[in-house]
Image (cartoon, rainbow, N blue to C red; front, side):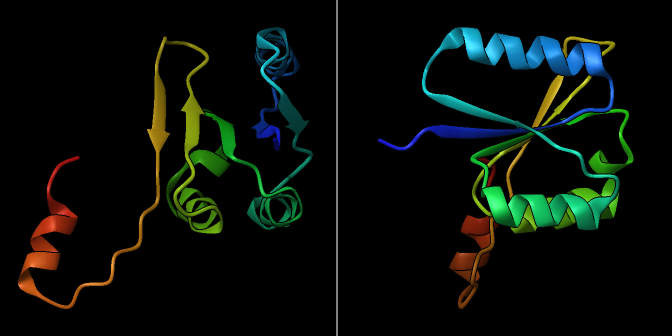
Length: 114
């Protein structure tokens, strides 16, 4: 059985350490990698090497905003990116899904709420 791989993208060392320790303590065969990426290109390189099952991003990071987030989501289609707020008990779980639309019914199904 393959381990579940997390990629932590946090600049705040304490918060990154807390999340990492929490995941390790769960002891469910998780592999935890800490990103050293400075920009979206560096992060995409890490993602292509590691192929993480989930990426955890710090909400205050520029990498969790707009176009950067879209590039990250496209790099791991179908797998979640979790944007974690350090100041609130909020986590935004985002998935990227690509849908091929041939008919009106396909369109309706693709925009129907989950």
